[in-house]
Length: 161
Image 1 (tube, rainbow, N blue to C red):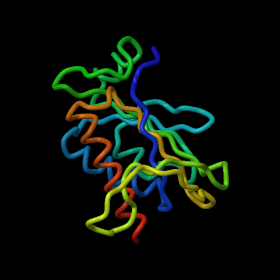
Image 2 (image 1 turned 60 degrees about the vertical axis):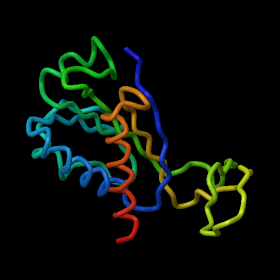
Image 3 (image 1 turned 180 degrees about the vertical axis):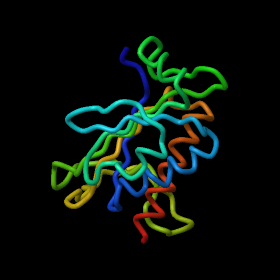
């Protein structure tokens, strides 16, 4: 079943390290967390402790379920909120394939204060960057927002050393 909400992040840091940090934090809440790793082939769902050091470097796919019950129901209900308003999610990542992309800035990227701001077009040089897509059950639930915030913070902390 194809469901879920995609959010794309672009980062210069090591994505595998950011994912490990994010999932280490989640594992404290989800002690029975199961993870399937992939790239060209998706492996079986295994406990996080046994897959943690195998998160692919550079490009890969990471599928995450709270426990065996959530993993079993994933095929039937897809990326949807289940018990406890939580659901399965995935993080897919790869090096940016285009050296630059046109974007629109909706927030002021400069720290100038007191000036009005109107969105404008810009070019993002993506050479050397990675694209990271997190697929969550929805866009706005506290669970999905929490996952996105945790991934963003983990990627930021690993981009700065």
